[in-house]
Image (cartoon, rainbow, N blue to C red; front, side, top):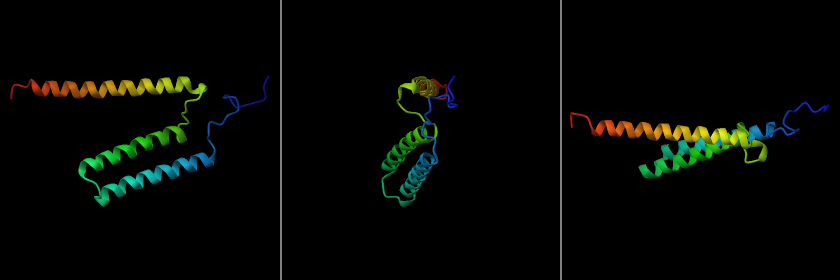
Amino acid sequence: MSTDHNAHGGSDHGSSYKSYAIGFVLAVILTVAAFMIVSGHSFSPSGTILAISVLAIIQVIVHLHYFLHMSFAAGQKWNNGVFMFTVLFLFIMVVGTLFIMDNTAMHMMSR
């Protein structure tokens, strides 16, 4: 019987204080950058939306890596599969809802 009490083969999945600190600092930097872009009015409205969208995607990746400990390692196959299914399901729900709302608006009697 193994004396290793960690159920994941001895790896801590990056859950050290250093990893959390790096993730927190990156999240704060990305948040401040988004606020500076908006408050500085340095881009056009469409450029601002694009810049904030890019920063949001980067922040999601930072959160997934540093706080949820998701990676492309072989042991993470089930976690990544469930995550991708969730993303696909949410995408289908949002696109389907927008399609139904647009289709309903096009067929209203008031038009």
